[in-house]
Length: 280
Image (tube, rainbow, N blue to C red; front, side, top):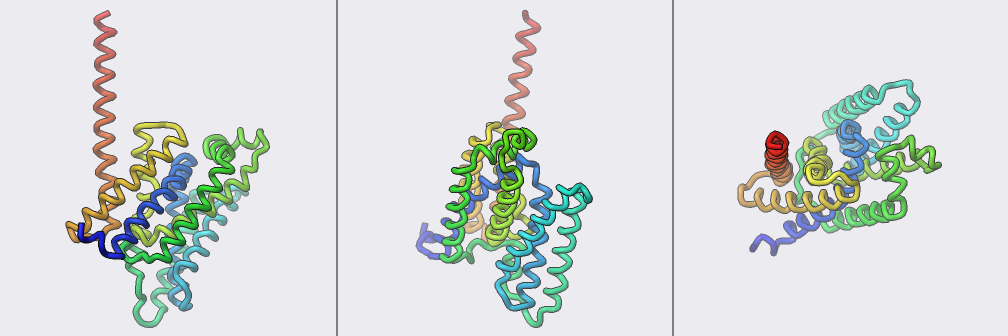
């Protein structure tokens, strides 16, 4: 427990808790809307912003945020115009963002500090300023969900029905796309571009094994994210391995165990029911 005395570890713990809350809300919307592929495209497109930020000498995070929002809005706009298929638009922005990032990082003179943290994550480097930024984003997201929960719920499950009820479906879509983009960029420091998609989908996949309601999935996802985040962080400390990868590995391991238990329980219940039917 001596590790808790260090500021960097305290910051990591606070960061995991705050990001778990925001990520659970965003991730539940992503899984419900089946936007996992879009999220992956936005995540990798933001790499272009990192490259441009390093080349111009500006904040890589702000540049990545600009690229993430631009790609998210671009995919949403193109897919709604029916001129380009959604998966094709995602692939274009995904490839373009990665290509721009690689080119500008190559053109950047000297060493690019912190690039590894953005690619593979390093939660132990987050600061109090990062935590304050995470907290502000999480608070804004909670307020948005509190005021527009019914609209978000209908838009996520049945946008056509939401249109018939004269709900602002387009506004909700663009607002949630903006929140997704900001959440992606803020959580890149946690597990990196390579593993970020897992953090926004695996807790929801585990939650789906035990519930099928939107609100319940959010609460379960928050609990699972915090549990696996803290467990992965502590495990990485004892094993002396990267924290981001350990957190994702912990999520994958818990999903595998939970899926096995649920499948086995369902199998036993099915066999028991068939046996009762045959006896009758």
